[in-house]
Length: 593
Image (cartoon, rainbow, N blue to C red; front, side, top):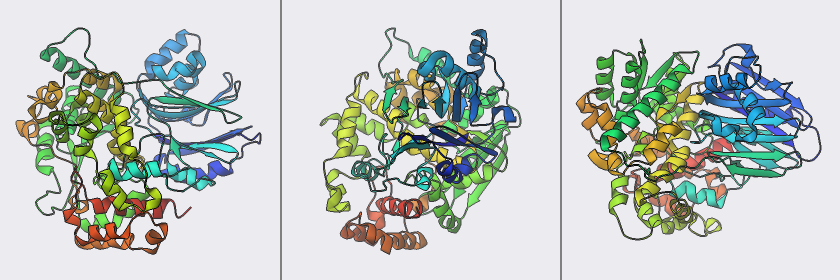
């Protein structure tokens, strides 16, 4: 619900606010309601606020607790903060505000770095401990809120996006070869700590890090997801009831912990429609819902209004239906790319950007269905992987997910970036970690803890926060995720995927919503690249800046430009769009610094 940034001097000098003030404009759209800075000795913080909980100035940031000797900047929402606050009051702590920010300060004072294990929600924060003279950073279990950092000469800096770090200066902007391999192979997912740039790193989900005034750092993992069956077997009915209860609670918490109205991004699919049903079940009146649609291209529809309209009719929501022409998509596409903290190829990024612009005029907080497919096995490639028994796990996974095999990656990039198959190495290591019963459990755990973080979750956070809109994702409640990870695979993969959610939805939603084939947030013009969109991408990939950068082999670029609709990834994405997006992101976000 905010943007954060800061600097810790590690060369003995005092911090000044020059770097912080340079970073603040780059995170301003994440927090349009207020801003603040703080500096003392080696540390300096900056904050942009989107006021959601305790709208008063008492919850302004950076938040300083003089008695405890702690200073905090925080982005996110802590859904169990009332319970933690009550526990801390019983322990003798006195509060000067009513929100969740101060609860983090008191929790750190009481439990130390173990406080993160008690926080239930989405968060990224930085805390300066005056007594111990160290900086403590933490990120939520599911990586819903971003946290980037850079070790630059004489200082350590952190921020909510890459652009802020670049604005502060001294960042090594050379392309990271490992990050590039993941970018072009793993659907633009670059798992932490890497990014596309050598000089920028990100804190992994479920991790925290301590940095002292001499620059020594130590990171630790405070949460890991187990994908093993529980000791006591459950019946199918017991699993379904348990998931239903956990999902109700996840929706309820994300509704109650806000001092502003909460709406829903309604795509017309099972997941967002189920959120509407559960909110109605919880007694929400005058629920606001929002849908967006685009022009059809080829045989692909550009909207799912026929399905979202059924939910609106059934539950009587106050609905906003938004239709965007293709020329407006192309006109606004560079803006959306400017708001990407990292280059993201998901075709729906611009859709979320344009939708969030309209939604933010009406409301500050929405619930959204991201994560349901990854947690409950909704994508078409899961059964394909499950049924393929040939080869090691990384090969079985890669056949159905990798955008390019390693040989094609070598064809795409210049020899300076050739090397080992970094993505296969990463996938083998992640799938091979202990704590998963079956191969499909390994896959879903990898997706939930890694892929979802740097694809749909990051995309929705970036595109909504670009308009000061907070998106809450109940399907990624870590209690629900832990429960789902322990479920037998057939409760996920049956019924064409998401079997347990379909059972829960029966009777709450029209059968046409439940039984329809899996849909995707449509943006056909970035899949079937034609006309002005093809001209646009060609101008990027033949530009002087692109040729000077020298990332791509020209023969490969020319092949894609000659027949873009002959070159799709395993996930049915445009390979041409992947290259154009990366190059344009570098031009607009790196070259300008």
